[in-house]
Image 1 (cartoon, rainbow, N blue to C red):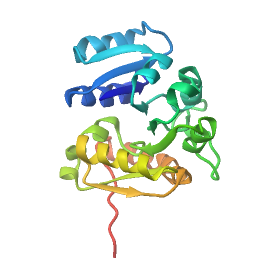
Image 2 (cartoon, helix red, strand yellow):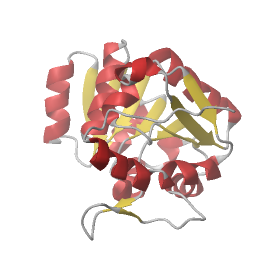
Image 3 (cartoon, rainbow, N blue to C red):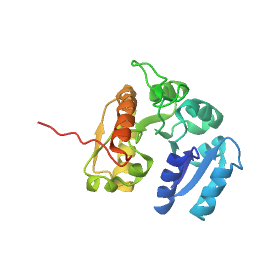
Image 4 (tube, helix red, strand yellow):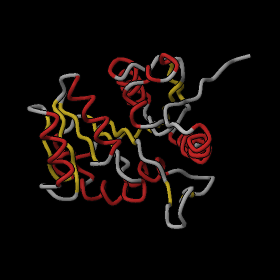
Length: 217
């Protein structure tokens, strides 16, 4: 499958590298066609890897992973363009983190909205599914590194078929055992609001290799 990964940071690198290892052709998108970080990743990843602009990657991918800094997510998607994204599953991994006042960052969204919702409103013809934003990038693609994989992932989105496709990707490609469907895209609010707790746990545990498991009584 041809897959677009928008973003050249650690999240984009982790997801793009995992996808290439599974035999998919992956184009990493950035602002410019010759981004140095993307070029370094292509050199490491091999023949199935390529790079381009946000628009070029979005046009290439049958599925699009949004792995940008949350503050830049909408700008990156506008640069990609509405037409290349129309009708495609858009997996939004980004978080609305505001680092302007130092650490720990704040959320730049209010409690009655989410970045995932902003993305869906801005691109109504895309099938936005929020996923993977609640764990470290290494755990995203290798859940077994925490407790043998006995922990949970979440998805939220308006399109049931798109969510089903994302669940197949999470379980079949990335190895997640349990994925909870939180309903429509407003479910992204809770997923994003978990980040302040995640950051505090990271500081307390001194490691990013952790996650939550939902236990029923």
